[in-house]
Image 1 (cartoon, helix red, strand yellow):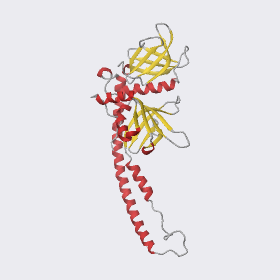
Image 2 (tube, rainbow, N blue to C red):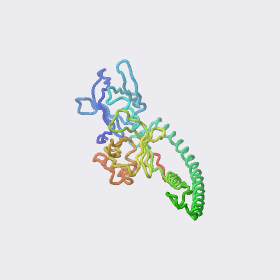
Image 3 (cartoon, rainbow, N blue to C red):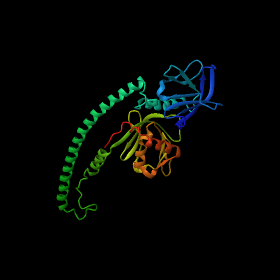
Image 4 (spheres, rainbow, N blue to C red):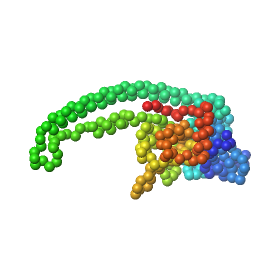
Length: 324
């Protein structure tokens, strides 16, 4: 565990209970642990497994303006303040990885997670059953849409027949535009577009936090959605915030085991680049490499995490993955 690379790290102040005062240090987050190293110290003053955290909140008191408190399973409470770039940005990332650790099938050392994790898993199981029912309804609606498409094809065939009949009539010699001035434009393009949208399948949806570049402090929780023809960064309600068509993605740079940057270049205006941070990114990285191939650049640190995940026999499949 000590060799796990840090996903993110931040400068902070930590309340040292033994000294009854605040000490400057650096808070770092790995995929499984929360660690603190005080300034001038050689070893970590705190190494707390995420699975052992029972509560995480944003608080304030008479001694500080704002802070993040972490309550360990044994009852120890840890205070972190003076977080850069901001308390909200740090809390968004910490909460994401903590919740994903609770939802993982196994806790620390292969043991079951605590009661809060079991409760969250029960909620997810209920959501899965609801999604299964929704899938059956959508399948039925898909059959209905298929019948509608067949009807549109028949209408289009009838219109083509009428068009051929109209083509027998000759246009006046003085008509400058076409041989068939009464010809109506069919809905072929609209039907083809609707059919294309119907075939656009969801490959995987994973929870994530994201921001635009240049980086700002407003990291937002949401989801990363991989489609057959595009990639979408959505908010918590799965409403698209940024959509990258597959052919428009210029490069995907995987900067760490849990962070990547997607860029679309433009001429005459700034590139559109988004940074995506997710605990489930190692699960969907093989899908990204398969779908975008040479456009994916995996840096050395990220490659180590990826290879470790592939070698692990107990690696889990992407969360909320939906086949076509």
